[in-house]
Each structure stands twice: as structure tokens, then as C-alpha cells.
Image: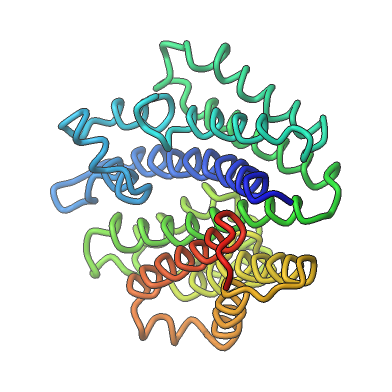
Length: 319
């Protein structure tokens, strides 16, 4: 496969997953904003969403002040925000359009239809604040439709591997960031850890990433707490949103590419080491290290692995 085609497939899937991630971040902000703030309450949850998505400086450069409606518009529709949901869907479509022969007609139709529906039916609404829950649900529904079409119609070849890699690199990064925004940014004081406020926020986060019922299946009706969240969203291989699940998928598909091209890969070696390390971890070890520090290093390491993929498969640099 041409390196340009591989890059287009990877980034089309990554943009699709990012649109879903941003919708879920907005849902976190929306749900938590329903809780009244107090003088000793939470740091502004909307500002934390900007910090989580890594675009706070871009937002402040344009809008200067933290305002809920401006942040929502910036994340949903703003053409000057390269990571807005509108631009994510637009960029996913453009990447797929450039490699139409590498995807099925059904995949192209799913992406193209989502782009046109967003452009004509949602973007022009003047009541986006009131309609935010409906817009979020639409984005998640379209992303699930596109994912399902990829899984059920694409040939399981190297192109498919790059599509899946894009999905799970973005998901790993997002899961780490959303756990971090909950624990490090939204929680105002260590005094809240283990409190009803703490447990309620974890509950809201689980619901926002569609993992609340899965958590209950895994742990029964036990109380949601910090240790169980670490185990579930970081170390549980049965949770499709966990970090280790994404790592396992990345390891598997990089392994397929190594066999397919009959070439070694630094990215494969590094993700194999990371996967092995994760298998030896438990919630206590992560807690002792510090959840924020653990997540910070994870985000950095997963990005370094992506750069190895970029060098080998997208730039064609021999390793």
C-alpha cells in the first residue's frame, strides 16, 4: 500500500473517533454543569474540557474569556478550530475521498452522508445550546454507523489495519485525557476523594463514555470508587474503552503489518513492551505512582509510538 493511502486511512479513522470523543467530552461538561457550583465547588468544568482537548490556548486567543456557549460552539462548529466536530467529520470525509478505491462504497456513503447531514441539518440551527444533548447523540450515532460499516464491509487487509490503528490511537489518548480531567481538573480538593461528590462524578463520566452498565456488569452493584475506576478504565481487557484494550488492539494490528510487509517495526516493539508492562500492573501500583503522573506519561508514550508509525509507514523512513 502507498504510504499516502495508509496515512489517509489512519487519519480518517482517527478523525471519526475524535468527533465521537469531543461529543463525549461535551456530554461530560453538560452533565456536570447540571450540578450547582459553590464557592468551594468545582473548577469551571467548561474550561477543563478545553484543557482536556488540548485547545485552551487556541480558544483564548480567539474568544479571550471562558464562556460556556462560546466553548460549545468552538468545539462543535468553529471552522477556525481544527479539532471541532465539524472539522473532524469534514477531514475524515476528505481523507476517505482521496482514497475512495481503498474503502468500500458503503464506508464512503456512511462518511459522506454524515458530512452532508451535519452541514445542512445541524450546523445551521440557532438553538444549539438547547439542542446540545440531541446533537451529541447524533454524532455518537453517526460514528457508530461508520465504525460498524468499516467492520462489516472492509476487506481485512493492510488498509483495514491502518483504519483500526487510527481508531485505537485516538481512543487511547481520549480515555487517558477524560480520566485525567475528572480526577486532576474537575475534582477541586483531595478532601472530595471517596465522597458522594467524587462517586457521582465518576458515575457521570462512565455514563458519558457509555460504560456505566458495563461497569455494573463487571462489579455488580458495588459502589463506584477510584480504585475500581482505575481497574476498569485502565486495566480491564473486557472493557472496550480501557487503555489496555486499545493497547492490545494496537499491538495486534501492528503485528499484522509486520507480518504483511515482512519488516521489523520500532512501533511494534514499543507497543509490545507497553502491553507487557500493563499486564503486570494493578490499581494499587498505579495509585502509588499517582494517577495524574501515570496518565501524563501514558499520553506522551502513546504519541511517541505514533511518531514511529508515521516515520515508517507514512514517511517511508527505514528502521
